[in-house]
Image (cartoon, rainbow, N blue to C red; front, side, top):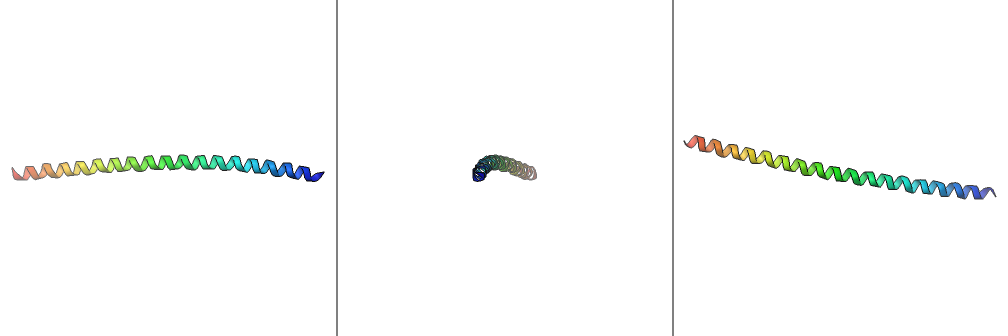
Length: 66
């Protein structure tokens, strides 16, 4: 009955493989979530910088007129 041990080992290997795949997929999803947050934060910050630059341009233009 040595083939029984082979099936047990094969089953244990498959269970371990499934567990590792689930963990890896969770980490990938977590990474994607963080990546989206960083991209959103960067877009917000660049928008604020653009708004400040536009405000400075208006302020300088008004100062030149005076």
